[in-house]
Image 1 (cartoon, rainbow, N blue to C red):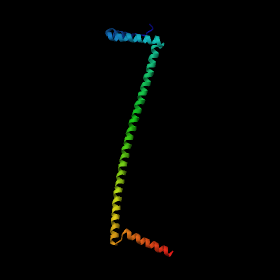
Image 2: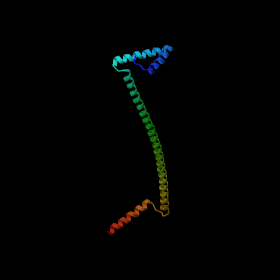
Image 3: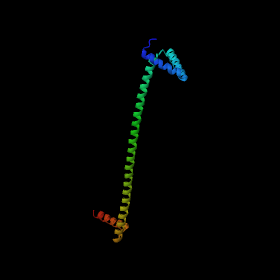
Image 4: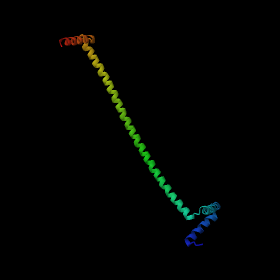
Length: 146
């Protein structure tokens, strides 16, 4: 049959396994019949089918590796984005707190200055009405001299 001693020995081992297990024998026969059907239908030999299978298996492993690498990249990118977002939220919180503090300080200073102005006006018996009256008199006197 054109088979060397090593192959004949392997065939003998396979034959013993097939003879000892009925299920394995059925699977072997079905596989042989399917291989023959594929060969008749496509014209592809056992070697070319195995070669094609191995080529596709190698491509599949490469694709799985690329998917794993891209998944790792996505995970790292997501991790960096989450860290950046947390940092941005902390900065925003700090800015918001600073703005609130500045507003509170401004409001307090404004109230203090208003209080001081009211106290000054009261001490000198001034009012905004009197100040406007004096201002109008000065403006009128300056216009009359000009």
